[in-house]
Image (cartoon, rainbow, N blue to C red; front, top):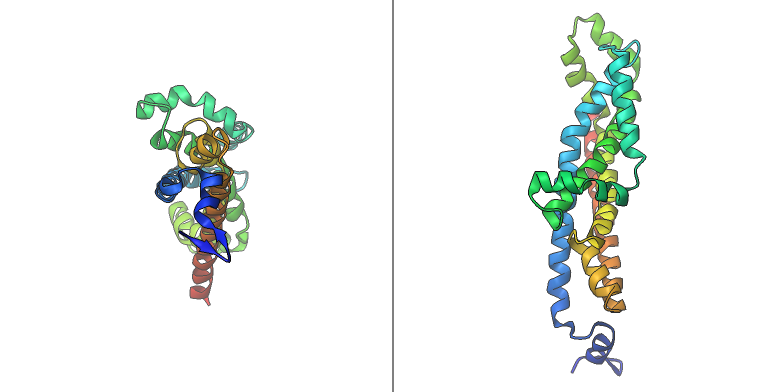
Length: 237
């Protein structure tokens, strides 16, 4: 019998978790599902969001690819999607999710609304990073005859990369929270575990375990982002 300082741990876990033998495996699997959703949705959001951000920046007035009409249309779409609370977007995206993956329930299905929610967020994050670049660097590249693509690939993206990497961490952390919300509607991951077992079955211990795991995941993502950005900055010195 497990005991520490006279406390019967088996009785303690049985009180708060019931038959607790399944809990470690369930938490591990739910954590994997959460990381899977967050990783893929972050990747998809940057594959779409970064080009969108580049277009938003370079199509502004006075920039290298000035196109005010395109800029206004894309900016309005980004703002419209960002204005939707995630839970509403999750519901509105159900038909599209079913069309893409064939179902609206489960871990794979959750990646679709997570990506849709993150794309405009990423676009604005990267846009902000690109706008922080000194215009003098762009002017210098133009004076040397650099093409638009060379300015984007050799000036804008390299200069903004430390900030972009930190943005990846911020995006992933936001998606951890979004994935927990998706879990309430059957999206899988730690959200589903916390809701259906911790809340619906009144197993408070499971709820606290999922909270602790989520905190650990968020801290880990932030540490990785800080280290990656620091390495990029150190290479420039």
